[in-house]
Length: 183
Length: 289
Image 1: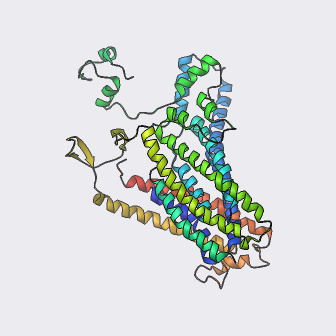
Image 2: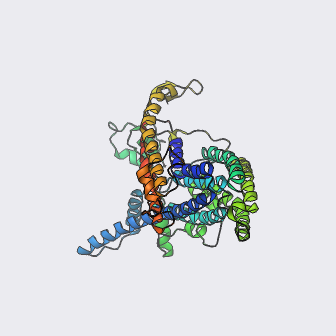
Image 3: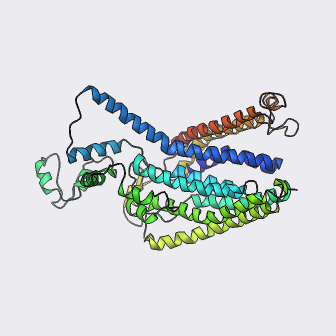
């Protein structure tokens, strides 16, 4: 699962950057592509992770309220009923998955280390994005998904491997970019 | 739920629901009779009660107010760990660590950015230095993160962790055998048995990846990155001709933005599609956890 998705996202997002950067050695083009990628990626992330589930849940509730309007007023609930209602609502929510969040962060790590020469400001932007990302993640966890099982862990697991891979190749891409792509 | 079910048991006929001992808990009782399908933790109960008592909106929890503060750059990992457990906390711990390490290059990058007013992009010595710095930074970051994980191992009392029974997937199938070390029966599925399953998912995934590659090549043609003559292998003439000067996707014009944006959107869609493919094939592979 992990290998498959990683390779796929990698081909999707980074292979053509490699192509531009290392084969054509066109640092200006690489730069414009990176900037576009950064912007689109982060906007998409916030939208798909927080905004869309929030909208879907809220419109669902709105429709229900609108339907209830035809009938009588909703009765005042006792605390037990309210708990049960909240629990049923929560059961309908999706399970929490950190897989995609990890994948995205690792990909960003890839951009900023592999193509550091092309777009230094990427690190600054990433720093800002992480700030937004943590906020949206906490919100997602709290309000939009079911409570996850707590498990023991003290490493980030298999993701460490990809970090290794990226830093290892970053040495070479940076050498190539610095030596050949600049005059 | 976990308390003993002496009284509850008495309500049930003994013929259909055989008893073992008086001290059996409800959870074990349900599990023994296969009445339990799934266990799900929920946040709602305590929140609703608290909201009732304090008259606040149940949507905003105490934790959210503690960790979601706008002015704080770092997430309070201890709060998250106390409520969500280690697996979620480690993600935020990693993000915090990444963030704190990023502040150095982020600051340097601003300096490099200002230096670019004095130098041309391709001849900027600062950019070269910066890229060298980033390569070293990456390595240092990983090494020190590893140190941090060992620290966490001790701090979070993790060194006694073993794979627990709950983490085995429901759908997992295999032969039952007796573990020679613990003498406990366990389900068992060898890697050699799994090989054909791997091959099957490879067959499903390769075409997907090939499709993704070809879509990217097509877009690179349209945006005028791949020009005829320079890269004979990947050139698709009728697409790249669209990016000729004077045609609709002329690299100098504004219409060139259209394929770039379309590419971004299509990659997102493809990723979503591939996510389900990957999930499906991984389920077929019958992994233990």
